[in-house]
Image 1: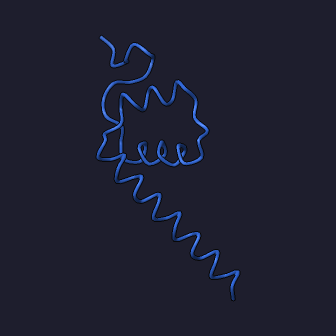
Image 2: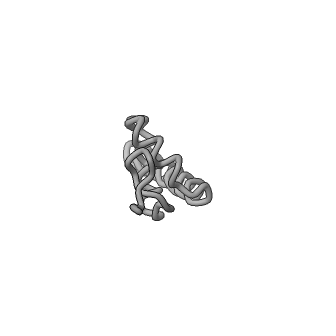
Length: 72
């Protein structure tokens, strides 16, 4: 037996780094359908929520830094 899902991807949970990469790519909205389907089967919902919150926090902080540097 192999450890591959019917779609060609691996079974099992994705690591937090893989989850973070999937969430960051989803912020841009440029994902292949096959990647989305694979991630939907592998990602842990708790990891997705934490990664999304961290990504949103980083985005807001970057925007604040940009605005502060422009206003000076």
